[in-house]
Image 1 (tube, rainbow, N blue to C red):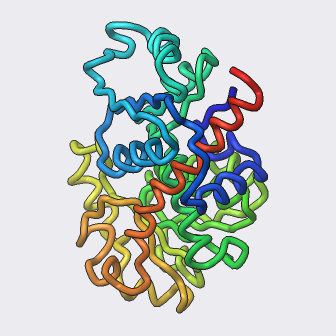
Image 2 (cartoon, rainbow, N blue to C red):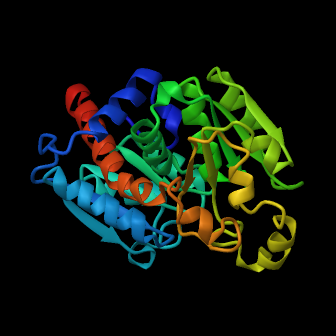
Length: 301
């Protein structure tokens, strides 16, 4: 039984296999006649559309489940939900507030669990990011990926994936919003260095990829005013992009708050790859589902 709660739930060979599968538009219909439960405690248009279409392309039936339909840990435990769903579906994929809930689901080993986003990790986004970098530059040709903004779940999963592939990363965040020691240790354990700074220009200097995310994520709305003030020096604009390599690309997981973390000029520039990146959410989901079903079939549930 294999689960995908964070990028390094795969080893390097497996990560490369998933990325390779993600490039293939006509994979075998490994989900023919099977269901995939998609549980959304937090809504997302990109995540729902990409996962539903990836499931359909593999011959399966996606089932979108609203939080009130289950009442996880109010009407019934997360563990009981998984054991029930295992009788209907071949994979359970969930977008949750609390990562611990995913870990409890996976601990049942009743069915493969896929993390669609939690408070600490966003590995499905990282797969799409890495696939985009491979297509636009080539993973073996990238020297540094620079992240500007909140060292959040998106940053963490991307940095882990980059480190596994031998790519150095940098992160520029204001005080109180940078990476914690445990995350940094986990990243560098995979073999690549992480540059931590509060200076966006230092982080972006000679980078091949410049990445940012919103300053105020879902569930942090009450902090918006404080965050706007804290991150005011961290907008990715054209001046900052000139610090990166001339052939660098700009990436953003979307939705973008134009005029805050990124300017219109940058997100609409030729360097911007945000929409191929968004489309790759579907392709990488197809690759991951194909791989995880193959692993389950080969090794048995």
